[in-house]
Length: 113
Length: 112
Image (cartoon, rainbow over all chains, first blue to last red; front, side):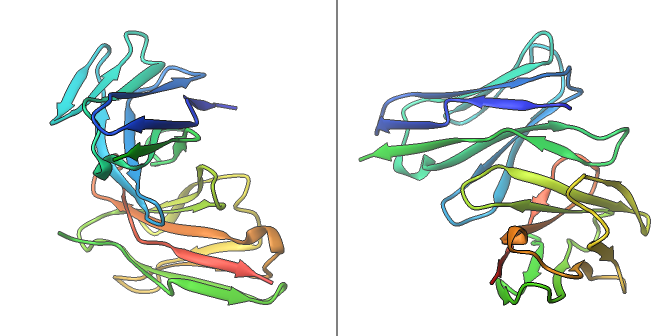
């Protein structure tokens, strides 16, 4: 079946360093979404990318959707302790518009102050 | 900001017992979902619900699971006969446009 994979699984950085997580799908995606889950919390929607090669920025976060629409990345510039959490990418997995999302395993970011 | 509300926050139940997890989606949303997350693992899709019927369900969502929207505001997940492996965090989510999901805070289900 369809798979969404993320690397790395864990990343420890010093505050101020950059961070990148990569997401790969086994199939072409119509869109890709990114969610952040704080420790003990619930996933919170960050962004959706739809177009091939699309790049979107949210302050220090840069999201990219690959040309083939099978991969994506999230880059955080100059990490802060508030960036701590697990970042999940998710792609549609249903037949038609059912809202079924296939989540990657997530990348857990730890930031040392 | 509108929220998806889930109750209870934590449920402990004996194996074989029935549990009902409750959710109040955002009021103008039309699409409703249940996901679960076993501790430390990824978020897994269970079921999606639109126009008063299931639109898709996963292999996890077997005959022991059911969903209902008994009135205009609540959305429930019932597990008829819980198993130890049903222990997980269950997240309800809703969406206005079948795209960006708003998740609730979750119900931690512990089956003993």
